[in-house]
Length: 245
Image (cartoon, rainbow, N blue to C red; front, side, top):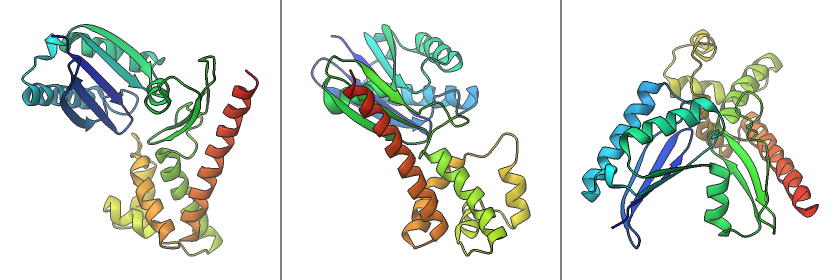
C-alpha cells in the first residue's frame, strides 16, 4: 500500500493530509512550519506534533509514506527550502516534492487549466496560468518588499494610519482595539511593543481591522480599500501577461 502526505505550509498555519491511493486517512492543522515566520524551535515543535497526530489518527508511521508534497511560499528561499527538506527527510519516508503555494493553489482550483487567483493570507500573491501551462505571478515578494493586501501589511498599515489619525485629530477606534487585543495598558506601551525587536506578528491584527471596518471606522475602511485596490492592480498585471502569451 502506498501512502501520500500533502502539506500546505502557510505563514500562520499548516495543513497536513495523509491519504492512500483511494482514501483520506488523516487531516491535521498546526502552526506555521515556515522558517521565515518563526524560530526553528517553534517550527520544529509544530512539525513534530503534527506528524505524531497524523500517526495517531491513522495508525500509519510517517516513515512508511511513499511520497510527500509540500506547497509553500518562499520555496526558493534557502532558509525555507533547506529547513523543510532536512526536517522532512529526517521524519518522513519516501520522495519529497517541494512546490510553491501558487502552483498547488492553481491546481486545486483550475485542475491544470487557465485561471487567475488572488491569494491573501499572512502574505499575498497573485498568480495565473495561461492556456499553454505557463504560470505568471505578481507580488509575493515578502513583507518588506510587497505582500499587498495581506495580513501583515493590513495590520502594520492600520497601526501606522491610526497614529497618523492621532496627528490629524481624526477619530478611530483602532488604537483602543489593538491595545485591548495585545493587552497593553497605554499608548506608550503600544509604541514600545510595536517597535520591538523581534517585531510582533502584525498579521494577527488583520481580523481586528476588518471588524473595525465593519463597525464603520473610516481609518480601518481606508486600509482595507487600499489593500483591495492593490491586489486588484496586481491581478490586472497578471491578466495582461496571460493575454500576451
